[in-house]
Each structure stands twice: as C-alpha cells, then as structure tokens.
Image 1 (spheres, rainbow, N blue to C red):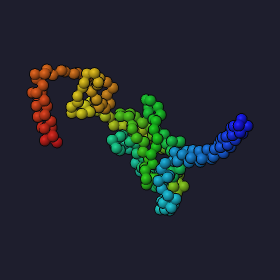
Image 2 (spheres, one colour):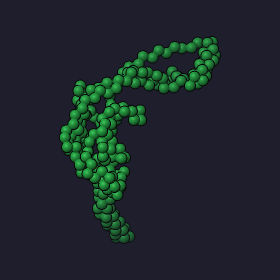
Image 3 (cartoon, helix red, strand yellow):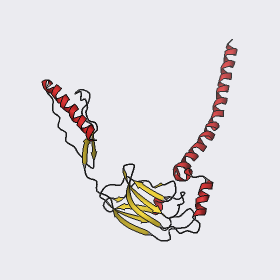
Length: 225
C-alpha cells in the first residue's frame, strides 16, 4: 500500500509539472500580441477611424494641392475652450503633431494637452485652454498632408484666450443637510479659488412659511424660463 501511495504521489507531481510547463509559453504568446496591439492603437487614434480606401480617396482628392493654414482661433467645443487649427487639405494622421506644433504660454511655459484630429483630417484641436492667457502657437514646416505635401515654412502667431468672468452657483435648488451625515453644500465655481457660504437655521415655527415662500419662488422661476 505504501508503494502504491508513493507511486500515486509521484504521478500527480509529474502531471502538475507538465501542466506548468505547458501553460508558461502559452501565456507569453497570448499576452505579447495584445500589448503590441494596444501600443499601436494608442499612438494614433485618428488613423483608425478611416479605412485604407477612404484615406486613399482623400489623398487623391487633394493631389497636387498645397498645404496652407486657413484659420487659427479659439472656439467653444462641448463647453470647453479649444484652440482649433484649420488646414486647406487633409493631414497625415500618422505623424506626431506634438513634435511639429507647439503652444507656449508666455507666463507659465509649454501648454499641456493632446492634439485631436477631426474626422475629415483638416482640423487640429487642443482643448481646455486657460482663460485670459497669451499663447504663442508655432507650426513647423515639417507638418505633412495626406498627399505628402508639407507646410513649406515655419509659422508663428500669438493669440489671447478669452476672459471668463468668475461665477458661483449651487449645484441644486434645494438640499437636505443632516448635521451628522453631510458636512457641506455642493457648489459649482468657475474661475474662483475659494467660496464662503453662510448657513442660517430656520426656526421650527417659521418652517411652514419658509417652505411656502420657497415653493412660490420656484414656481415663478419656472414660469420665467
């Protein structure tokens, strides 16, 4: 019986060893391609939106045309201040725009952010600009279009972003503030560092009148809208 037990144990160890050896190379083969694919897709998201035939069609439509800058301005996109560069023909989405186009704040230095290329490949966008800043935008002559045309010369322009007036508001029209649960009131602030909020307690005997006045004001506000 002892010999049988020893043999069974040795057999189980041998099978476990075989399983471990088989799984090791398999895990490497599965993980490696996924990492490479992820890295390739993160380098250029815009190029994945257009298929090869679509890119070829755009290149043919712009064949022989020069690459020029049509507009450089600040616009509002999805509620965010955005710097938009509009070009005459589609750009090559495979190039690294952060190396050929630079935005520098005169006070704080280089502006952080990633360039977004539009679906038609003609607009470059840099979101979330700080208000009331003097920015120096430099476009290198190495910028390349989809038809292999280049920008031909370096370009530089200084723009001043719009001034946003400070504003403060409450996140809701009314909130319950249990003293032992919530320690503050949600406040929305734009271009404001600190906000002072005063809390006043309503006496129990004055609560019905206060609520009726509050509901009346809310109804008037809805009618005004």
